[in-house]
Length: 147
Image (cartoon, rainbow, N blue to C red; front, side, top):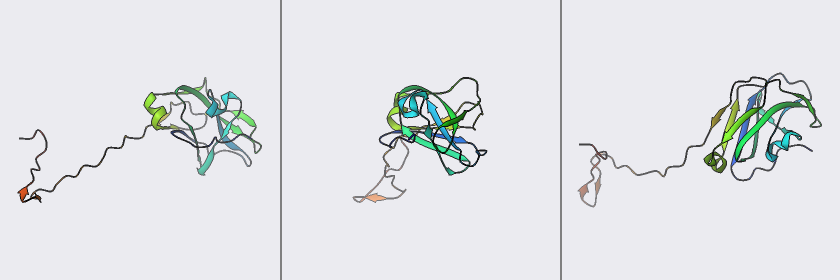
């Protein structure tokens, strides 16, 4: 049965707003890579915060084309979204390594997606307070390069 591939490693998360599905319908996504069904098998999205539908797939590399579809309860495509051409996202090497979130404005809304990338983790650095002492000496708390 069509569905979401197992989540392993970096993910490409898709998010789209669609509040006018009928009883028994869901929103799915289908696209140009294996993670998105190679244009034949829709991946079912989840409406955990209706009307926002989401799906995480393993992050592919390069350019990915896709469309949202309405699917019946058996996972068969009932209709394709009515936008000219395919939606497209180009993933940088960093995005394929660390994952990204693709946020589309709405089902059948041709506006380009917003792509969010996680910020790299930066190790916290201890910053002493003014007047702090270490080993009997006052620590210099001036910013680097300040006079």
